[in-house]
Figure 1 (cartoon, one colour):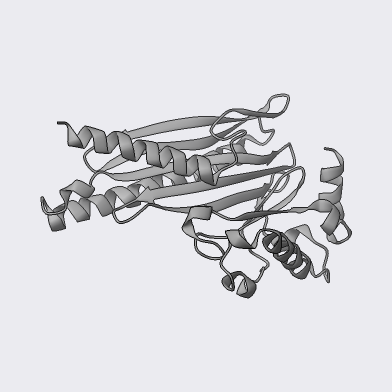
Figure 2 (cartoon, rainbow, N blue to C red; figure 1 turned 90 degrees about the vertical axis):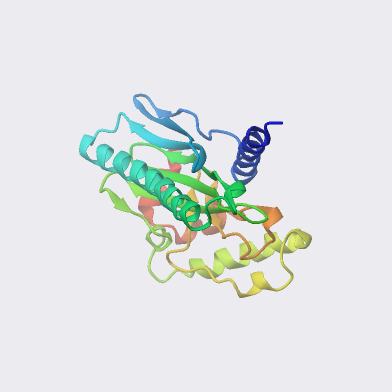
Length: 252
């Protein structure tokens, strides 16, 4: 009986299901057309070795008017993804050396990366990426990372950059997150979410509908709930948005 082969196929299925559960299905790992000539393609790399196994999808921006910035962003996304894989590869190598045959059944370690283009036009790109790893134990672990870049300046945007000075966006967002959690309390930890505060650099991405706020695994909900996300509609935040952001949204 080929136990190794069955284990490999099973882990591959688990990785795929976890990534699909963590990410909205539309648009992930596929080419996204935002405007004529401006698009996001995908470079897919598969790993099948004794140490690691899995598949990663890397965003590749095409058609940006600023080729230097385009190259910089593409290199950044590639390096972030392959760097993550290299970390898992190194961990697997160390694990193999330390335990040899004793715990060899935990290898290969599993990796997976997938992304969604949340927003893309000539002014701004917002990408939401989920990184998955399994290095032994009861289950794997996923974490989320967003990239929000002003394409006119090349500047990375944090949450505070979206709002005018003096506007208490943190409180407005916190109130809306609480409202959404209270609508489905059984999906979240009973008390932990009450202590979570929104900060000026809280992880987020932009969509045409609103700002999506993310929390890590176990921060406000059990593992089975995946990576919690909350969409805060622009209507709830409009008065505090910077005019440049309002103009950008009015075009959509």
